[in-house]
Image (cartoon, rainbow, N blue to C red; front, side, top):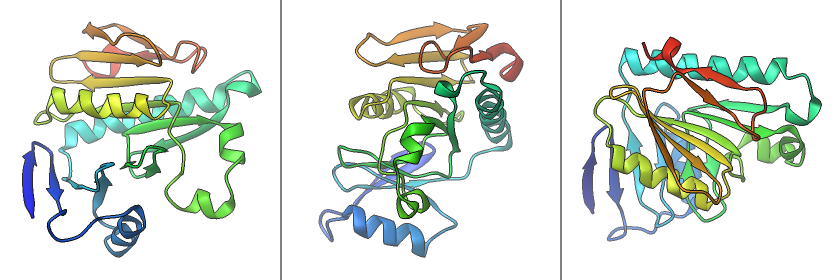
Length: 202
């Protein structure tokens, strides 16, 4: 069994001991509800460590802004469901991830059964945010975002508060990296959603 240090988390290769299937992973999470775990498409186990107060506060603010937009949307076609970092998504191509903030349109939520809603959601968010803590790797964040896009995400933001840098991922388009942007737009995925970047990351 090989353990690799990945800043704010550890990736554990269990292949020499066991093949960690999605079913095994769900059972592992249920048996350890106080731990935040993820699973790669290769079956590697990712153990996430608790974040510091500053990053936790940033994350709470991001989720608040997303929820506020979702509840005040003037058109029913843009209303959906928002999720925080405790929500697991079983992505179509095999991995199980928990983005820091996520959104799906209401029609996708309503297409899920009651049982599916109670477990890891078997879909990929259409919009999501990954927020790096001071010790997280920008490169590893990029790899994770590319995986989300490969699984069908339409719009994603990789945010590094320390450097005030944002990478914007759009389906089918090159990645755009912005340094200290004043605002971020939800574009056509989240119409009229504007994040005041400077207000959250002064």
